[in-house]
Length: 565
Image 1 (cartoon, rainbow, N blue to C red):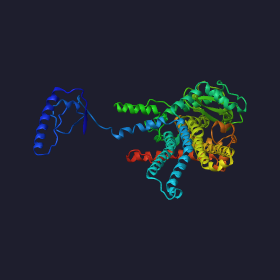
Image 2 (cartoon, one colour; image 1 turned 45 degrees about the vertical axis):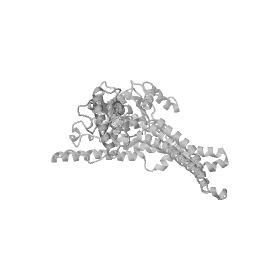
Image 3 (cartoon, helix red, strand yellow; image 1 turned 120 degrees about the horizontal axis):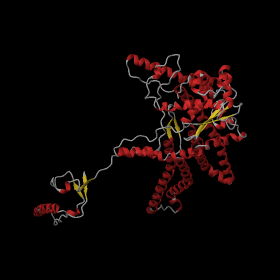
Image 4 (cartoon, helix red, strand yellow; image 1 turned 90 degrees about the vertical axis):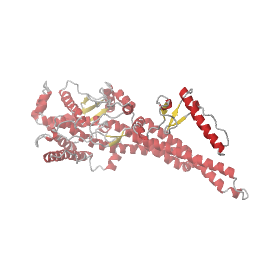
C-alpha cells in the first residue's frame, strides 16, 4: 500500500536523514563500481522531490516525521458497495414523465440515423470485398482498408449507442416508477415525479376541487347539488368521517394488540395485520437525505408521517336516476374527495325498513347515537363511500393518469415509430400521404389499446378497493360482511356501474365496447368483485384460526396464508 506525501520544503530532520541515505547509497555504488556492476555515478537523492513513500518498508525510522498522520495522507479506494444506496436515489430522480418522453425522443433520433449507419457499413464492406473486381484485379490498399475498418468500427459503436440509450432510458424509467400498492402488495407503475404530483394536488386544492368536479358533471347540463344542511348530506358526511378515522389504523396494524383474535363468532370480524401496511409513498428527496445522514453516522427517519388526503371533500348530486358514486382527485387540503348521487341514497332507503328510514329523516343532533341504532343501515350505506375512500388512499387516480396518459401512449408511440421506420422503404415509393395514413392508423389503434389497458387496470383497482374498503369498514366499527350483501344487491341493479370513475359513470358506452368484448361481457366485473371479497373474508377467518391454534400449542404466530390479490 502506498501513501502520498506532499511537501513544499524539506524539513531539517528529513535533510539529515537523506544525507545518511545518500552516503549509504554512494558507498554501495562505489562497492558496485569496484565489482564492475555500476556503469554511471549515482544521482544525489533530493528529499523535497519525494512523491510516494513505501509505507510497508523499514527504510524510514519509526519516529520519522513522515510517519505521522499530519504529514502523510493515506491513499485508498472507496469500496464499491458504498455506491449501492445511491441507486434508489438515482431511480427516484429519474421517476418523471420527462424521462420516458426523453427516451421516446432519443428513440426517434436513433431511428433516424440507424438506417444511415447500416447503409454506410454495408457499403464499406462491399467496397473492400469487391474492389478487385472493378479495378483490374487490384485489391484495396492496406492503408485504405484500415481506414474503412476503423470507420466500420466507429459506425458500429455509434449504432450500439443509439440503440442502447433509448432502451436503457425506457427501462430505467419503468424500474423507477415501479412500486407496491399498500395492503395488497400489487406491483404497479406511477411515472410521476413528486413535483408533478404536488402540481396536480395544487390544481385541485381548496375550492378548485369542487369547480373541477362541476366542470366534469356539466357535460349533461349544470348539476343540482344537495346543500350541506340537508339531512342526507349530514348522514353521508358522518359516515365518511368515521371511515376516515380508521385510515391511521392501517398504518399501525402490526403494532396493535391481538384484538382481531378476540372477536366472537357472532361479532363483526376484524382483519389480520396486512403484509404491506399503509405507508406514505417514498420520495427521491427522502432517499437522498437518508443516504446522506447514514454516511454521517446519524439515524434517519422518514419525513412523511401522514397519508395526504383526509379529510376528503364531499359532493352529493341530486340525480335520482343515478345510483352510483365516484372518487376524484389527489392530495391534501380538499384536493381529493367523493361524489355521490342521490339515487344511491334512495336505493339504500328503499331497501331498509320503513321505521329506520323515517327515524333517519328526523335529523337528530348526535349522529353517533343513531349510528349504533341503525347499524345495518349504516353498514350498507358505508360500503360505497368506503370503496371510494380506498381508491383515494391507494392513489389509484395517479396510477390511472400515469398509465393512460404517459406510459401506454409512449409505448404505443415507440412501436408505431419502429413500424413506420421499417415500412418507410415501401411507403416512400407512394409519396408522403401514404406515410401519413400509416401514422393515423397507428393513432387510431393506440386509442383502442389505451382503452383496453385502462379497462384492465380498472378491474384490478376495483377488486383492490373492495378488499381495502372491507378493512376500513371493520376498523371503523361497521360489519364488513354487509359489504358482500351490498355488492350482491348492486349486481342486479340497473343503475350500478362496474367501475367507479368519472368517465364510466357519466358515459358508460363511451369507447368501452371493444374492451368489454375482449374481456368477455358474459362475466360481469362486479360478479368477480363479489367472489374476491368473499374470499378475503374467508381468509380473515382462516388466519384467525391458524393464529389461535398456534397460541394454544405455544408456537410463535406465523402468517402462512398469503393475500388473494
